[in-house]
Length: 223
Image (cartoon, rainbow, N blue to C red):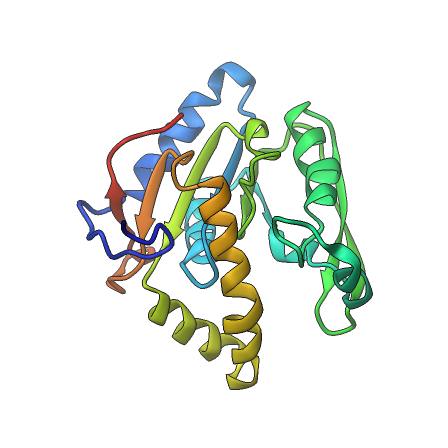
């Protein structure tokens, strides 16, 4: 069986970011323009880049990063959560997803990676559309809040290379010993790829007018 976190099944067709964004906006017409869009996938699979591309076509949306919900060190040591043990996914649901789904204002504190504590407070007006990007963004308990879900994947070696280029070689033990195994467990247990509108590969790093391009790797929709 193919690894659902990799792009090994081979791409089918180019993903048209602009066309997808247009469909998201059109579908939100009956909700007064309101939508929640999740972009999930393992580390360094292209989620943040894709969210940025979508945001350029959906400028009305506020982008939320799951990395802002990383747990401070002392809390990580006590977490023991079966899914996303390094992240405060309950806080993501309670401060962002649930109120946004109800059309209420959103307010949350961003994790500060430099000081290892919660820092800047972010406030988002009521009924602002959201793009929520990051691994665990569409975990099972969060899934019902979304109107749209995407899942990104790429070959494991490529993801590790990208991660170390971004975070530095000293981060390799975190990537290989902590983050990647936890992501593997999450995808195997909760299969966010099967709950996505579309599964996309960033294996083929082909530049386009809007940045790196993404390719469909699954045709079926499991919604």
